[in-house]
Each structure stands twice: as C-alpha cells, then as structure tokens.
Image (cartoon, rainbow, N blue to C red; front, side):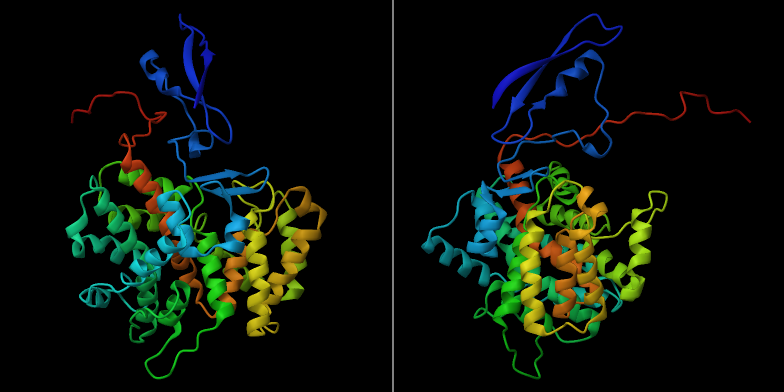
Length: 426
C-alpha cells in the first residue's frame, strides 16, 4: 500500500489530526481512522457503508462498472472456462491449480463428502416441517463435535483439513436437510459423480430407481455454486470474520454465516423472488405491480431487481441469464405460469425507461430463483443452496484473517439512551 495522509480539524479541538491514507491494488483509497480514538473521537457509519473493516486479497467488486474479480480473475471468464471446485481451490490457495493439483483436489473433496454416521440421528431431533436453513445452522455448528481432531486454528494443516471438509460435506448436509423434510431416505454420496452432479443425485435420487444424470442440469448447478462462491465483505462474510475474530472454531463461524445469510435482505432474496411471483399470480397482474414499484410513496419493491453494491448490470446475472435459458430448453418449462411472469418482468426491467434509468436490472437472485424453481427445488431450499455455494468464500476469508495478525471485532456506538440516574428509593 502507498501511504498518504489526511488532515482533520475539529471545532474546539486544538490539534490537527493526521490520519494515514492507504491505497489498495484496486478501488478507493481508505482513511485509517484508528488514530481518532486517542483524541477522544470515533466515527459513525451505520451499515458500514463507508468503512473497510479489513484488508483482503480474495475478491474485488466495482459496483459502478459491474466488475467482480476473484483473485484478479473476472467472474465471466471463470464461469466460461472454470468450474466450481477449481474456483474453490483458487479462493483458498490464491492461484489456479495445475492439472495435477486440480485432480488431487477433486479427489480429496470427493473422499470427504460422507458425514459421520451419527449425524443421521441428529436430524431426528428436527421436526419434518423445520426450515432447512434452521437445520443447517444446527448441523453445521455440530460438526465441531465430530471433527475435534483438527480444530487447532493456529495449525495451518488443521485449517486446510477443515476447509476441505466443509466444502465436501455442505452439499451432503444440504441434501439431507431436504430428504428429512419430505420423509425420504438419505442418499449416500457417490464418488463417480461430479460435485454438482452428486448434489443433484443426493437431492433427487431414490433407492427405488436408477438416477439419470443430466449434463445440462449438472452444469447449471455448478454455475449456480460458482456464481455464489464469494462476494467480498457482505453481511454473512463479515459475520464469519467477526465470529472468527473471537477464536471460535470454524464450524461455529460458518454456522454464524449461515444464520446471517438466512435473512431475506441477503441470501433469502432468491426465495423472496419466487414468493413475490406467487403473489403476482398472473401475467395480467404485472402492470399493477409495476405501477406500485414505480410509486415512491408505495413501500412495495420488486424483489430480484437492482443490488446494494452494483449500480450496473450484476456480472453474475448475465451468466445466470444464459444458464436460465439453457435449463428452460432442457426441461421444456414454457408452460409454468410463474416462470412466464418472471420472463415478462425480465423484459420490462431491461426495456422500461424507469428501470433502465435507475439501473434496476435483474440480479443474480432473480435468475437463480427461477432456475432452481424450474429444476424442481422447493423454495425453502434456495438459501441452503446459496449457503452451500458460498462456503469457500466464507472459509477463505476466515482463513485469511486467522493466517495473519488480527484483532477481535468490537464496533463502537453512538449512545442516545438516558444519562446516569440514581435508582429510586421506595
């Protein structure tokens, strides 16, 4: 980083405060405000919209230009030329693997996909109607009770084993949470299938009949995982880092990330998209909802359009759009009324002056939701799939933080409560 400095003068304070400015390899410069505390001040930034809580070498986003880079590689190139497990390797290790490294890595992940047999009984404690995300919060956190042989976070080899285990076992646990909810037997993972193909098998396979692997759907599933793998310092990743800063074990940290992801403003957005399509109900109602979305006095907002970070077309959405059409062609789902509503909303968002001017383009949640719906996933599994795909991003950020000097996270506050007062005597 190249260091510059900012000079801050504050009314009533005798000194000019010098604060260092740092420049990264990409993006805005940042002012290190840590020096304010010794002068009796700290900053106020609700939502952390203007605050960098860490430095990182993993992912870079330029929302204005619609750029997403993983270790410097554009997401569009990774989606075209790479696959999910290669991206996992890249996020964790910092470089793309050689052919031999890739084969070794895939082999390691395949042979870690099974979970401890006692975890099967853990699921019996959940009601059949439990939301799969509730189950995932519990079972992922419980992994530390089964794999306590490698929980020394100061040991680089322990961290690597844990990262491999998490990437390998998340699809297995996700599929188990689904099978539990519908009362079907768990399907053991198959090492002869790809990562995405194995997940689809564990989700939709049955002991009663042979499973037929669809290359188109497997490729689509791999793309969904890949496009959700990491997204810089979002709410769930920041939660994982904050939990990790306490020295908590990595399984607990990832469970915390899953909890944060569950919110409808974050990972639950693709679930909210399908719920809203159901609410719209028919193509004849679309104009009414579009009118409401344009009314600044109406709190209604169309889910799946626009993004907190991107003020341009989400680069992941472009890839997901292509995948969406491939899945539709494969499955022949033109007659699905919800998908017809989605296609009409997409057309309006890309052509209507109001949406174009405000850059309310369809985002990745919009497309992923309707793809998963077409593939037969129930709506309450959408966020579980997001969590599965996001696991390498979470653990890469956790590992990056643990690997270097770090401080326990401790945000400050602007107190607006009562001043000191005495307890009343009675």
